[in-house]
Length: 460
Ligand code: ATP
Ligand code: MG
Image (cartoon, rainbow, N blue to C red):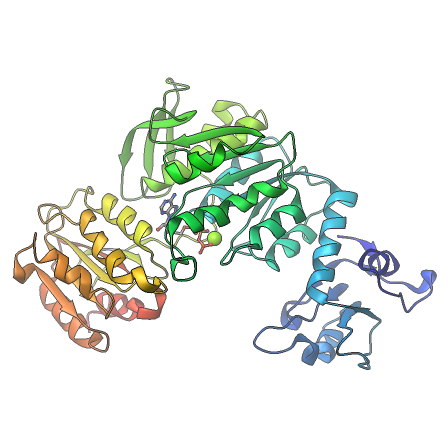
């Protein structure tokens, strides 16, 4: 971005402390003094610590100016300051002004319980074949990340692809009105944050808020395999397109072939084009379908979409193939887990060719609230002893899955370790795994399965 401090002051409704001629040009925003670039406007936010404690550090790193919350003023600073009621709201106001008055790109906003970042990366890759595209960096998808993303755009940006996350009602309404998207996408409804929301219905309601800021002539793209979305979509007045695996959808995939490192599929729509995406998992096909619908809305040609998807760059591939010390193939996915994602990964894992045994090592999925025992037990539907003959379970919440598996697995094939017995789990696995085996590791990050992974890699 490039804006005079006086213009910033006008937009956020603050007094500019300098005469017009003396005003510096603001070239970016930062809320972490360590990541500040010279010329940035510093935005002190309340995190674990109060951002106002870092004003001196921000000035030292070259901040051109800073916001100050009115409640904290006066604070003496070495750099010009704009006193505002609330620095976060001022940041959002500035972002909205910059988006609409300075750049005015088309906006694609993406939400969903899982698959937001992947779909964002895929849609951006597809659109980049024809447009100058800016996308959410990494996973900056909240009320701070979205304005930050907007303000990181250069003025010739044609399409902004922005990820929007939420963990409470009202959040997506605010983000959607901030960005007023031309296209909104809901990838799927899962159980993330069900501890707070209690039911999937309520999660669906909260996700639907993303439609509230959609432009009148905009497009609503959603996963039509999800009845909760289909029901709610009937109340949406804008154009709609659905994707999924069901032939009822506007765009659906068929002949899906899952490989360890990529996935292939066809579309009924263009039967001559064969698609391949460089990521594992059938679930990623639905993410790709969403990206294809976005691309078509902006007239990207089918062949260009096919090429873009074939080698798109994923922001953070949380699933990783590694080779253990015994020579076993390890599919590591130890950084987050929820029931839908766990079942999705097991579904694919069960199909990969394997000359030894497929072994699942699963840990607790956290933040599932009152439904936790039931949701952990529900993973049993994705475990079939003829495909995945050995199961290791680790944690307290997942004991309900151990109980449920007793009905379909031989007792000796299900190994349960309560929390605190990670070393026993490691010892048992190391004694069991051999070079032809294939092992999947998945749990919430709080379970620290990365220690188990490391032990399998190191062999000690
Ligand atoms: P976050 O809420 O952390 O930002 P996200 O919605 O951006 O997550 P991604 O980073 O794209 O999601 O994917 C995270 C994990 O979710 C994947 O590794 C996979 O296990 C699972 N996942 C991705 N897409 C889907 C999908 N469409 N359906 C079910 N699970 C999915
Ligand atoms: Mg994400």
